[in-house]
Length: 326
Image (cartoon, rainbow, N blue to C red):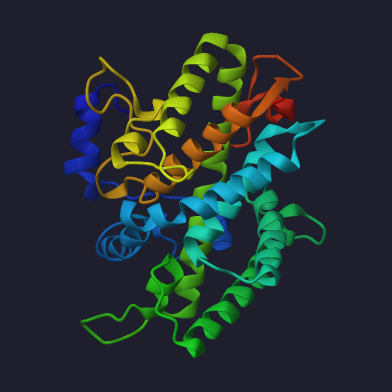
């Protein structure tokens, strides 16, 4: 346990090689043992260098129209006034953005198969690893096998079509090790794709759920965000959501004026800092932009309890009603 910003930076930035991330073997099996966040050292460094260009500002800037479409579709689907579990709805949104950032364009049939099987895997990820018929963990193991086969089919199609794409999957497929001239195996690619799906969904969805709760509970905060979003909208050119690097970096998420450096690090620091942090900030900003300008919502249960799922989320996933603004 570290108790000071200075110590945190010292360990994460200069001494990360002394610490190895460890997970129960049952969890590694469900995601895939070659997934980036299970490793450190040379393998971790090599894979991280492969990941970073696909999640850079220059690349994700081109995804803004598609992320906007996903955000508005997600909000429209829950805006009928019925009570929904906000956290679960945010998980659907972040999953769609993760698929976009990994695959770029992906056939609907493949996307639905990935979603169906990943949801089964997700339900058993934090359950006891009891290998008996009908148990959540057993279902998750079977879903993971199906996911591996689906991803191998997608990889094979990409290779046959010789598509040179800038998305993450394209980079993984086309990578060739300079030392031995070998390509990455399909299993290794599948492990890392599923690892990104896992890392990109619950973390951002839980943060979005807390943001919605705090905006609902604090009218002054909501008004301040509305005014900020209105200013951004008025500065747009051609009616699109224009985002500069400064706007993305200066979101309320990272605004902690007056605090010491390394006090607030939602994405970590050093070699294990989240490689997808720019995507996460962008999708949060886009969804909140559309939410506060075009929709209204009411929390049905205002209980202030915290529920771990395993990430801390508002009680019962923040049941709420959403509707379009008049």
